[in-house]
Length: 330
View 1 (cartoon, rainbow, N blue to C red):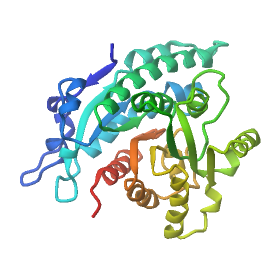
View 2 (tube, helix red, strand yellow; view 1 turned 180 degrees about the vertical axis):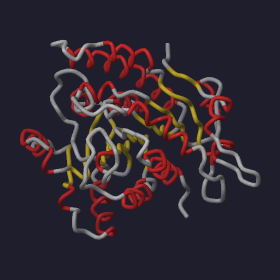
View 3 (tube, one colour; view 1 turned 90 degrees about the vertical axis):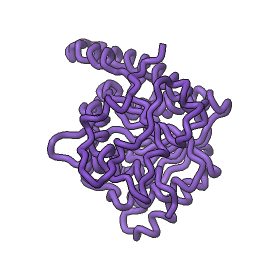
View 4 (tube, rainbow, N blue to C red; view 1 turned 135 degrees about the vertical axis):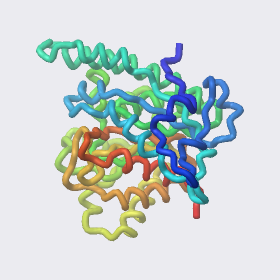
């Protein structure tokens, strides 16, 4: 049984701040009454939320990403419908129902010697739900846009796309970390390790990797694997915005023109994330990357690891990135 809370127009009406003479995105966005209806939808993209942070906690990270989906919707559904923004291009499907898993994670005592392993068991269950939903979206011929949640969900998304397309897929990851940690138990730091080991992931490119937070063992692992390519953030540090785009294009060229797109928010300067960084790409540079990325054949877009609080602009930040991604080239 699919663990999906389907949305309708009625479910999002309280997010939308209507104004006479204006049309907000949330008033025109598309909905379906069942996941099987996606086959008949004219929209190109399908938007899905994953409100959980169990995988982040299992990786000893900072919780809070479970709140990102609602914060994102509050901003995204209130952008203007105009000649540049076309809500008919997007189906708002709903969210993975993570409530029971979040409650179970909260009930585990941190003093339990198997605390992290037990969280990992929950992540495995979330993996299966994400896989089932995303596979149905891909089989319907749509491009999935996922707002997380932790980076653990990359594994379920990659597996779903690979199964639906019947081939291992390539993936680009804009991230300060590789998430290639060992396969000890499932968490947000080893989704790509599992995807590679199980042959769902073929070529893997990491862009914006930080020298200070990558173990030597992982550098050695990547250097020994011709299917993995990485570009260090420090090599981009003093480049112009245009030169950053050129380097980003080199990273994408390694993936032969089609790939899944991962964006971990800990790569963005001073955004509140599970691993917030004072040194990272600016939002404006990230928006330029989105314009470059959308020119390729994209299997999905996954934005994860943001951890909103009342003092941040995370909802608006992610809203810019998603609207840039689905916008038709000017």
